[in-house]
Image (cartoon, rainbow, N blue to C red; front, side, top):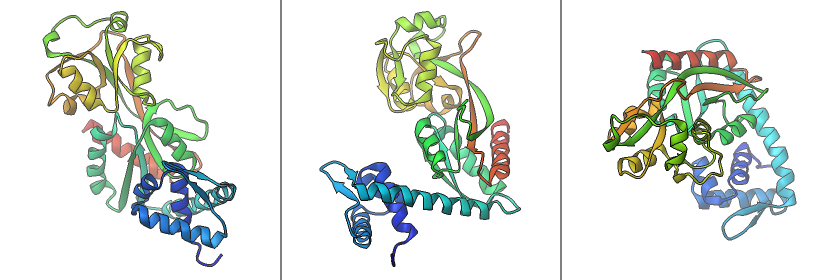
Length: 296
């Protein structure tokens, strides 16, 4: 199999994960035509088609399924070797693939990246924003080194370290500023603006309001907290927002922010990584630096 390289394996893995040439090409930083050329070259070397090219997606052939299993095993071994090299004595250095959930990433990542330029200057931080389910899957297949998510994850293969705890605050139109904070039972009867399915913060908000996921008591689903806050500012309803997001998101919207009475809804944000990761000790140092950023 002269000519087969890790590059081919990584490109094919991306194509299998995204089932789409355009999205896969974006994820590996090349153009769609370049990825198509690489896949045709790989198919030529293997002597058969790896994917069935449909109008809007691709499907793996039987050869593609077999090749994907073996190539992912090889890629996993290579990543473990890379981790072993990076686990040598000294500060964390080289590439660190860090996943972050969307309700944390815009508010915490800039602080983390700024702090690491001083605390770990040899570190090349590669952040990836995604929902919890996808980040945990990426940790399992070793395409991420660590992830910042809401705890607990309760996955036996993962180590969890809490970073901070924060409250959920209520956002209402500015005209309601100073009015009594509605109870969860009252909130159930008013239209809530929520994040789309898949976001853990949505599930936490529904749990606090004692609402089932199938109850039609919310007005809309948004893809970001920014969208929800702007809708509240336009008088379209209420929403809950994590405390870390308040300073940034409320700058450009006429909204009233209020705390709930005790017991206040909250969540714990932490960092998780595979227990088998050779970088575990250095990731603990990484977590301590994040904590220091938040308390400074």
